[in-house]
Image (cartoon, rainbow, N blue to C red; front, side, top):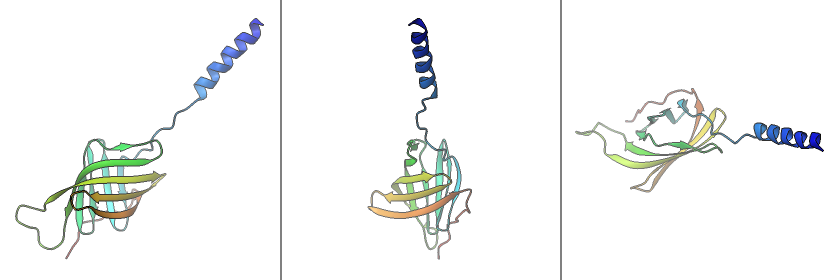
Length: 132
């Protein structure tokens, strides 16, 4: 009986040691695609579009299922730079990470405008804000 008790304690210990909780995928770094690119660091990030740009605040989060949520600002571009720069608009960023791929959607909250979804790959090509 004493041996069986030790066996159960050992088995319980092994099962506890082998149990893992899901961890969020790493998204820090550079992501690029044909229509947008993203550079994300712990302190925030920068998004570039063909006719605009955005910033991501430091409080971004990735859930264990790979869902990225963030807030920041969006700047609509196009034409000559206005005096004083582009007007910032509050934005939310939602992405889904699957390995080295990310689908990113941006919602400009004050105009209820949705941009994307953008398909990005880790270390993909940078997109530069080019508008005529």
